[in-house]
Image (cartoon, rainbow, N blue to C red; front, side):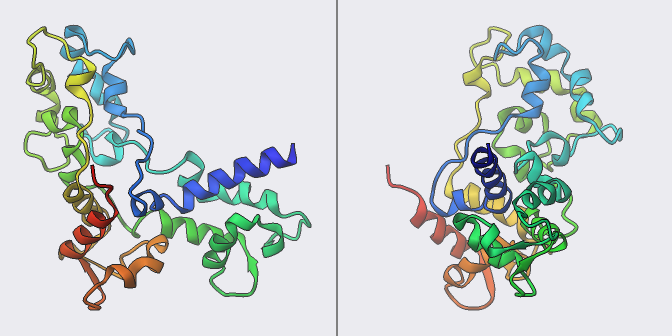
Length: 267
């Protein structure tokens, strides 16, 4: 039982701390649930029927968690990490299960070998002990830039449903756009049968340019078109110098495109 628990804990920690790794290796992250599609497809048959399309304006408002009459990326995008990875307190509780001597901190000998690198990065005072506060701080750094709010129009481009509804492509589904959702969705009905099959609503394949645009949208907090080292997440710090080809302390679009192009397998 102890072995099973540790394996599960390691998986949770790796998702929480290392979600950037899939991009570095050119791999594909498993598809995340799409909240908008799940909300619209009320009978969960994978097809949006004429009735479900007609009900879109009212159904989508169920995702409006703050009640402001519109949907932002915080409401319509799937989570980027495991549930425990979003909540620093939940991850602290799970990681402290490794505290075999019960002293309230983690030492290197209590952490599995595969997590030693994560331990070293999170141990910011380098005292060989990982405190709950250091775990919380590390999770917050990994989760996103401090103060990050909604994403821009890049957030809707990959999903045909969101892209159709977000007619001004600003990343926000306004009250007017939500009210017009049924009409917008009908534009995706390529075969004219009145319904939307899975092949008519499937996600676009992300290109290198899309990945770079997504990264800049996510991490370029001052929107100057490049990522400073201070803006980059903890998990990206070790690769920063490699990516920063001109050594100016920033990652610009060309440097990111060159890096991701080299990582993308040739077809």
